[in-house]
Amino acid sequence: ASGTRNRRRGERRGRRADRRELRPTRDARRKAAISSRGEYWPARMALLYYGYVDFIMRPLARDAASHLDVGTANCPYQEWFDWIPERISFDRAPPYASSTVTGIEGDFMEHDFGRRFDVVTCLQVLEHVPEAGAFTRRLMALGDLVILSVPFMWPEHMLDDHVHDPVSLE
Image 1 (cartoon, helix red, strand yellow):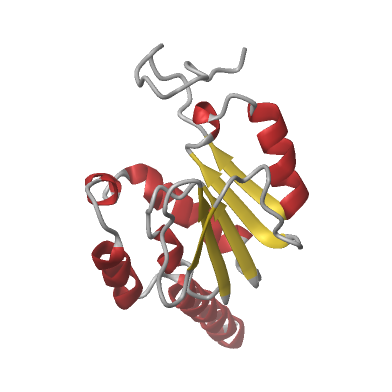
Image 2: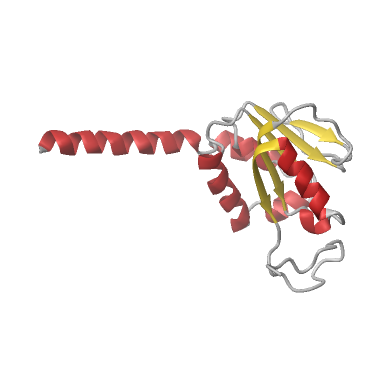
């Protein structure tokens, strides 16, 4: 019985070590906070929402070798996913870029990526896109795993640049 108990303890310790290994390092979080310019990211980086993004990415993208983030708004959260060797930030405005994240500026519907990615994220972007269906189909064509988010059930006309407001199940 004690052998079984010790084996289980060892397995639990191993799982905890695996989880710690996937947590963003303090350096990655600091680099992300320092690297972003402007006021958008500093005003948003403490939102619980980004904790959920991090929480979702860790198990689902654990084995990913490539990550494309579409519509980054110059947010450096891709730094948190430092176990993914290839990270690309894409936006129609100057995207986030660093020594570990490649930034590409362009028209998403026109740009030729020339390949698929293990993970594609598009966070809080679709509500700004007039042709959200076509945009979503393009995202799905580029990724083996696609993670999308939209501001669900926000008040109508909360922001002027939302063309799909409110987003609901209807």
